Image (cartoon, rainbow, N blue to C red; front, side):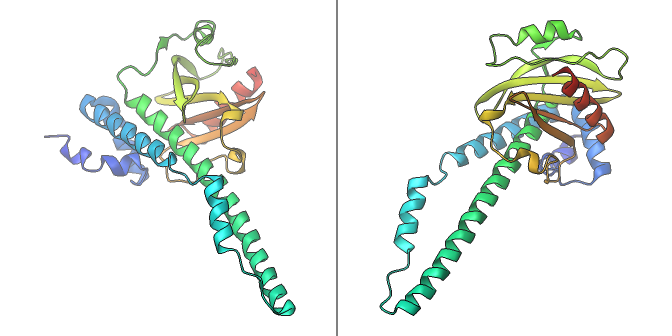
Length: 249
């Protein structure tokens, strides 16, 4: 089959591990091929399901506490030697705690960026990318009322190079949010909006995903909401659309 050569590299493409030039070819092919689009969507959904299942078995704080108690240093007979070991143990615990917090924050941040990229890819590969189809923000915004637990504003696009295609409901780690899709030139841009309190902390520490993804992304928090703008458009276009949203909010 003609698509077999594409499908053998589909997982590598979805993981953002193909060269930039080949990524553009993949983007164009996936948009035009119904079979590869469906296959891409299926693999992204399976990837997200595996990630969600993995998070169910994260060790609890109580489990961590029991392990720390079991490995805690025993009292020493010599005061001097005991103090030395106690100081060393304290230093190790402090370093381990700081490392755990850092890695936990980084892992949570990377997880969010990965899921946002997956949502974008899955939507672009879908035969029905939006639930409400309209270029009018006054039609799209009211559609979300009663479907998500917050309100947000959409920017005025008059005299801009962006056009609104529509929107849909989406979920990030079981948290409901809004997904808007915009066009600029021949590129599609996704804008996601979620409640800030439902997401991991530290997302602003590295606003662009450190993972190799064939997308540009910007994120910020405003008015208790967390915004993500992602797409294969240029950094300048991503930033410009982000500025329009910031001004509207």
